[in-house]
Length: 288
Ligand code: SF4
Image (tube, rainbow, N blue to C red):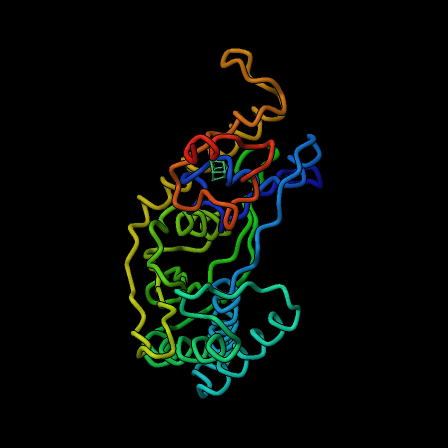
């Protein structure tokens, strides 16, 4: 049974967890790791994430309307929602823009990109969908004391499918575990899922024409297996961090409860809250 002491695992963390388990743990279990005496860093909130959140907001508003009214609203509806979301995020003043070589160096470029990305989704993907739920949060106990929690971007009918939306300058390396996690969640709530796919919209410089979304089918069985395997690693890691593992010489509170991967492309102060802290020294070896 789920209770207040349950450990919650967000589906959105499954895709990147295997890239460096320790970084994944720092994101998932920050409070617990800090309570054990480590001081994890805050990583900057980048403009890529802000634009992505705005595009998701626009898409959620238009597909939410399609789910209830049975037809898509005009493009002005998702555009307004996306720009409003971006404006709210930028007003907080904590968003880090790209450097000189990145595509988003100021507010005007960010607004232009979010709008272009929403327009291309509205024109190329949205008309094909029959959404029944949009960003609907689900939870399920996957093992005693562990709850999986998340919301897939959309669950559609005909065929019963999950679709997830990704944005960014690079195509996501692997989405299987995340999609598999959404599938497991929907299945645990008696929703039949037959197919899964991911739509990726590239964030490009305003000087470049916005490319259309790239849609990719995800093998459901493979995705669910990937999700189950990653979840098993997460649960073993946090149990070991709490209790230690004498057979492996790991004491309670030892960062080695979680494998570290300093070869990860995201092993840097920009992306990892453990970088430069007592929770991880492995990054320093590669910089010698
Ligand atoms: S600093 Fe590098 S090796 Fe250490 S947790 Fe972060 S990404 Fe992993």
